[in-house]
Length: 109
Length: 113
Image (cartoon, rainbow over all chains, first blue to last red; front, side, top):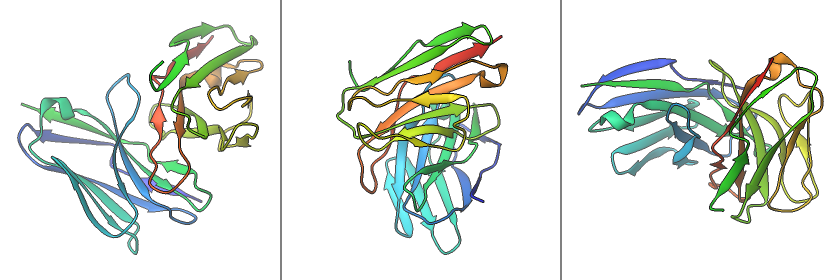
């Protein structure tokens, strides 16, 4: 079966750095996406990785290792507004998105 | 309309009733999707459409139907609602091709009683 694993919840301090991990087992791989979802709102796109390595976008970076079936989202200089759920999704061989359950990130002052 | 719009935003529905959730996008995206999101579970695909006139079943299609008469609209119908269909429903759209992210509507919170 297809499976995406992420930690259920993480806590971090304002101004710090946090890394949210995602491991996947899917039938084929056509890219990995990270989305942010604030409570009661729709998911919004953060990043996309299809090749191994690090993609940096401002305070957010995303890393991919296809051989390990592993990705992480790195958030730097955390702000209170970063409190949200972070969703990892993999596009499989049928170009369908398979979603993890999401990681709820709690930022404390 | 800017982006992707869902209606209604929330609804309480009696079990056994028929209900259509509406979804409209103005981005000319060819692919559209319906997901449900339940606490502790990831987004689960109900139905999808890769282009106008075609639809496909996702992971949890039972009890739901869709149509795609044109590019912009992708309604989801619950023929006879049951309490297990209580969920938050998200419509999304994307262009075909690698690296193209999905854009989501604001969601419909449906409670079946």
